[in-house]
Image (tube, rainbow over all chains, first blue to last red; front, top):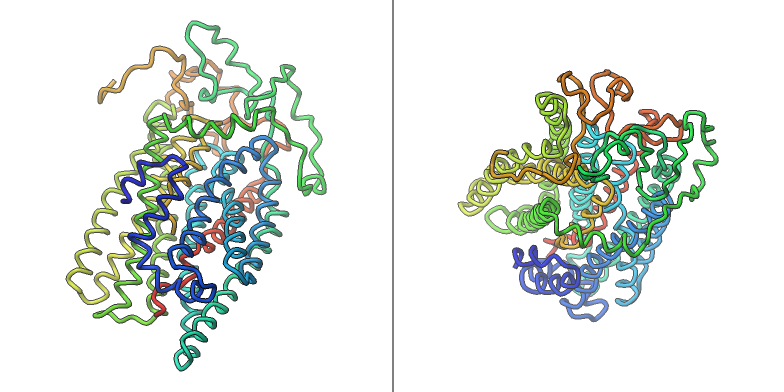
Length: 451
Length: 95
């Protein structure tokens, strides 16, 4: 099922496949957890999962296209600000939702607003960091997303394990409502976290889109100069990062007055890029024709699917005999993955940038995007040992430290891979295709399995 | 080229290829630009790709602190977004 899903990347299939995947494979596993709310709102479990979770994933896909196109045209700061507000509002809304329809509506809007944080960040990284610095920052970005996933689980479990004592003696339905209201507390907390995010974004994320004029264009990626045409034009060219408005007269940009702090804090800087919104939205689909992008998409998708699969099986296996972990201890196993991903990021980021620098040195100083690829070898090694080890140890029902060690190992490898080759292939795409390439990120999101 | 990779005969440059440092001096004119004109990082060894402009408003010219704060902010935001995935808010092994 997963494999087909991977190959059926095109967008219309996504909701259908989510439904299939969930109702066949993941559905029963997640079932127990969704029971209370589904019961409270009298919705069938399948419908509940499709609406609540599938809706979010489909919305992320749509949001990636929509917000990325808007960001290309009007700059990134307004998009980040609007979606941060949206995230906070929808969290509070979902927390207070009293009907299934209202809840799904909140979640779908939330999915839309989640998209830029997933699909637009790589472009922002490329806006402010130079090529040789990007590997590390992309690793930090991935650490953020995965850290969030990993930390939310133990925190959520901590909350629910507390409530469990209260529920135990109670009537099942009352217990279910308790559980649901407990979940509301978590959702409110998330809303608060997004309010903080909004404040941080306002102060620390000024507009990073910039019309760059009067620079030497050594980046040969965006103008595919054909040999028979005049090459000279490419040299002292006024390089316009977004490739749109050709303002031929090079302004002396050094004499530009520095923008005041107040001016930078404006939600919208007035940045406009003269591109068609529609073609910007269609472009990622065309990019799938590039083998590099297609490959990166496949890699990212499989990686995320495995990550999700593992985190589900961890709970299942450790909470059942012979391990019989308490809810809180199961949550704690995710903490080890978080530590693993911290280590992975710490090692991987500098490793990527280091390899790139060293290889370009040996290549007589010339940087090639392919230099980001050799680090993939680590993925192969770590993931293979991690997955096989974890599977075998769990199958043998070894004492818990053994699978316990392997599971961070495989997790670590995924984080390592996330921090590393996935970045590297993302960055590979970015480096290679420059301006349009970061769109492939939203393709990745399209075929991402629901977590 | 090795591994059966086809030689590119149409483009002047391979897309994404850029001079990153200049230890191989004989190739300094690889992109047809005198390397003396290029901007380098603080160590002076690595050519900045892409090349920043001279403007103080160019994001590439932001101070290091500012860039790191930007990075930390989106890292936090991404963490929150990661935490919002639904399945994780619903504890799996509750019952």
